[in-house]
Image 1 (cartoon, rainbow, N blue to C red):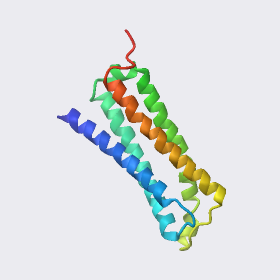
Image 2: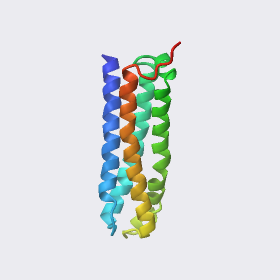
Image 3: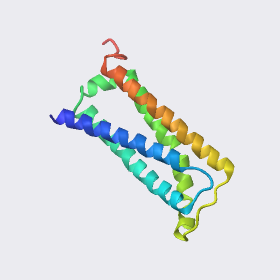
Image 4: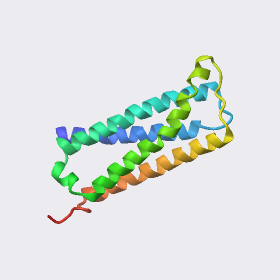
Length: 152
């Protein structure tokens, strides 16, 4: 039963991660209002917390649940999955830094100023994050069905 709960929590956090990033994508548009900017900052904080939970629940499945660390650690698809997750984490630093640069203006009750070039870059990064996140479940599905297992 604990194995099923661990898997469920992992899936739930992944869905939350994707939902939060999709919400960021929908809200990030010019002209930026005070309310949307404040929401984007809060959503991004929740996204970071959710990403941490995805990592924690995933690590718990590798170490204590699932098929055991030996299965995962000898599968190149596992490393591809983790690498893509780390790529998403790296990519997410640009939107996060952008939002955190707005804190001063938001505290003053003003909508933050953002150049069209920076706005376009943030949107493209969010879209790239969404695309990469879509690939990770494919790798997980392949891995769960025995693909990538090295002969040993």
